[in-house]
Image (cartoon, rainbow, N blue to C red):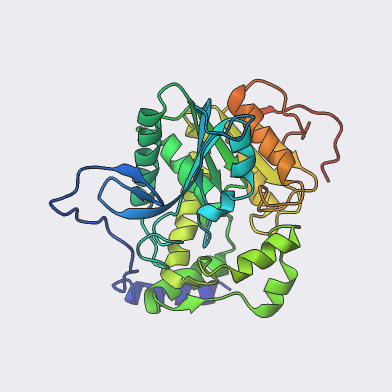
Length: 345
């Protein structure tokens, strides 16, 4: 095994000049007047137009009302703003506006399929949060990051310049970084990203048929028919993904906002061991919830409405017991939601 790893590292050194292809910031034209929210688009700090889905707060009669909270939705890998299409209408009925945008490289945003460095994604998040703060100065501003979006949000909120938001909700954040990956996986990915950075890898059919990110089969079928979903990833994109996951894992201890971390016991995407190692680094004030019947796409699961309600409860009052009574993630260093004897196996 040592000889194999050494040989791979020698080859890797010879190929170090083959760089991954990643996105760069846009160059604004002379007509650029600054970041803004438009119908169906979020114009970011550099003039890039990112896809935007918006669900405005509604009153009891279904008419528009001033939101008491605004949720900024950040989707996961190969997904787009549609990740929030089930939760956001319910939140709207509770007086909350949701702004979910397509991260660069995904959905309706530029560079579809090409990885955008974390610095760009983080600045996009800072920018849209600042726009929401300016538009709704009296509302509670919350960021809800799912999977990859959770890792990006962790990086942003652990930075010296965190988004100007009041709450952070992490929905099965991607924290399966380099330090949690088996050595053969690390070496193989590093080599692939430098020998064939543009090669697209797709999961084999047997894996797709066996590994479900949610127990909501109807929703999974709809996702499979959605042309804005991406099914596969370039090798250099996978390299960027694992790096982001590592930074998300490392950043948990430095979060600069009241945080709720949610995870499902049946999650087949982010391994349970990686999650347990990661949550040991949470700040003491963070809260966690472990859903015994939860999967990876917690907002789309059949028990999704329970998660939606927990998220809204936390945004309203970070110290209040979660309505679901979900217990804390085993081993988490933060404060539990509330323990009511739910099974955690």
